[in-house]
Image (cartoon, rainbow, N blue to C red; front, side):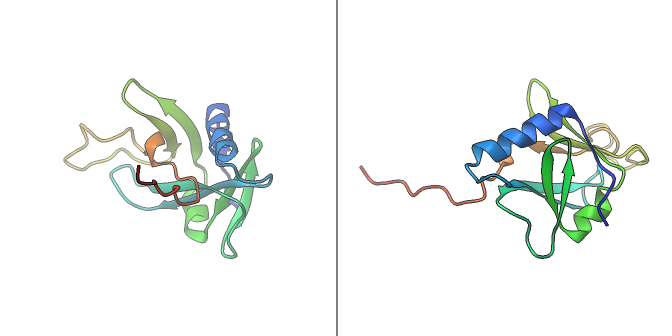
Length: 135
């Protein structure tokens, strides 16, 4: 079963750029892996991908195609995916309106409740970098 996910226009624009700049053919999307972890409750990884893997399902929201494994589908139920940008970082944020505030000792430095950030620098293109040639 596919989750009920909201993707904001800012997040959709960001994801579409990732896929477009990956150089993959039409029909490509974003492989999103979400698992439990961290003070916010989420640990996430993503990269542009040509197609879903056999164990993934495709979710299309606001013109964005996401390839999701079973654990990610469970974790994303009711989540809003947004793009946030500050003076020091930018990336996707995942907000769960039903998530309680963090009660750990690092709560002062923790992200907002139910939010995790993925830095732009962690974006994978889905293929290895070209080897550098010696001069």
